[in-house]
Length: 154
Image 1 (cartoon, one colour):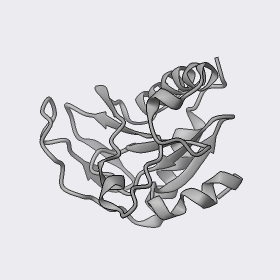
Image 2 (cartoon, rainbow, N blue to C red):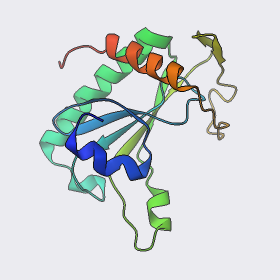
Image 3 (cartoon, rainbow, N blue to C red):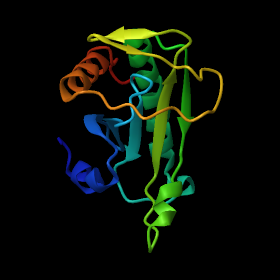
Image 4 (cartoon, rainbow, N blue to C red):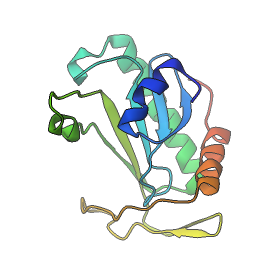
């Protein structure tokens, strides 16, 4: 991983490092049922969204636009789901939540990438998707495509 705080986040298994900004770190999530699924984590300790600064919120808004643009260009995403879900943190004793977002691209069509077909059979619903791991080589190729299509900061 390329940033100091990334090392602290390894225990959360947010996935493979893609890039970071001043306040956020973007990972390709282990769950790739929907190609391009990412986790966006705050790069400092924080337990809840109300503790974010105005600067962090502003930068997050910019990052949302950049990441959505990149994944749209990369894989033809139909729409996006964003969620800040920290439920599992409260299963730990003591709880140790960390502000992060799940970015889940949704597709109304199949996506072919590196010889694999990615389908979103529950498009338009909130049903749980089956876990899909992909080989490391393909994960790195997904990251490369996202980085290639990532616009500069607006």
